[in-house]
Length: 234
Ligand SMILES: [Zn+2]
Image (cartoon, rainbow, N blue to C red; front, side, top):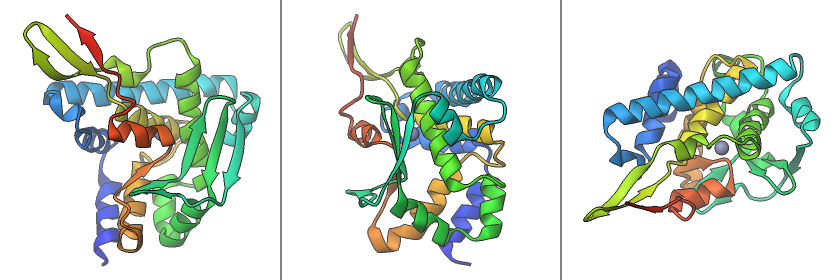
């Protein structure tokens, strides 16, 4: 078996909590939290995603993600632009002004090509990849438009201390963990869709050197730390 496919099957067996913890621990800011805080943050992110999905399901019991987007006034568009930015592979993006979801046809086509039908069924059941990525972005729409503090700001890591002062930052990857849990819950997927990222990274790396998957340009910025919210606190 190809090593990439072996990695995918291992990911398939992992729980959402384990996948979320692995995502969190790959974030340089989150690595500063102790394990108990990391575990609690992942559990909160998963619960937030599931609760947000339950709220939307109550409003739209029968609708698929694209139809929910229409009801919420979120346009869903596709593009044939190159899905790669540096070493980041983009499947989809959410833009808030005006609200819209952009799907990268090339990235979806690549995933369809490398994902065997039986494995696809085990990861996303009867849902389509497009359903999964639109759902993921609907979580970002929800967290952007509601009043409560986003999950990425609820946990803070201390970057450094100077006397009684501390520089702190939010943890953007928590929003991605929650978005995956949202899609899993909304579409009743067998797995947290992080498994799809793992399949994609394993399959495209030899050709493109992709080292991670992003779903928004903001995530790209976040990964470089430019959108990390640094606060000066006493
Ligand atoms: Zn995302």
